[in-house]
Image 1: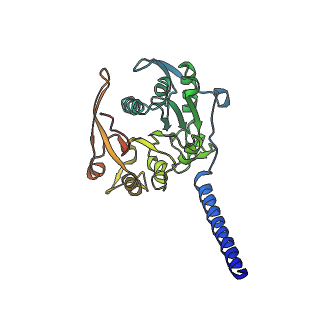
Image 2: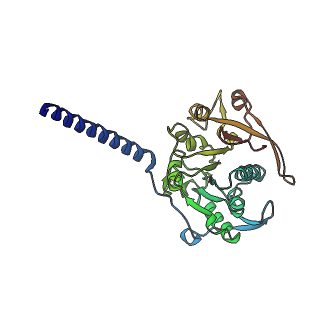
Image 3: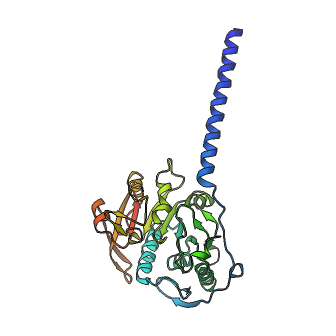
Length: 296
């Protein structure tokens, strides 16, 4: 009996030791994945250098103000198309949080927040942050929109032009995982317009098992990352891993084929793997298998 008790105690000790080792490994792994930097929220323009801005009133879908500096992104048609798709996605999931990475002047963030969605706007250019803050203030958005002055660590200086690249050297880095952790892993709709670094923003998340949060839709400016060099995009070293990551994570790619703003009617088609590579469209919406397509 005594011999049996000793063996049992030895067995229990070994079990505790194994469990402790597994717990330590998990904590270390989790720390490496998530702990890059805390979210760098900006609440006032007084926290930044002054930027000359001009503002205009927008009345599409809702009424809000969008402000811009002299070097603001000029591809308004594309940005408005992104806005329309994101608003439709939020209509399907009104309680999801929009993470707008590379938010620029707020073409996507501001109307979404004004319509009542919870929005996290992320940019690394201080001029864009100034524009977002003023647009938020003039639009009287309040707590629906939070502004992060951060770089995405996997993706370099998104939001920075050649002229502004020296402005972001001291901007703290953050990962998508950091933002998801801050949101307590709520359901998310993700817009990525990171000037060629889009795939680095999302690839790590796609290969996480299990997923820390459910990202229902991922909208990407596809031609941003698909500058062809031979048969591969030169702007994204992780392109094959990203595309395969979307597939194994249960996403399908769609491209917009039409949008009627008056009727709020949207049409889209599913893209094949070959079409993604050979004839890349301006933007791609990755739809998770648990979410409906936007034209339903």
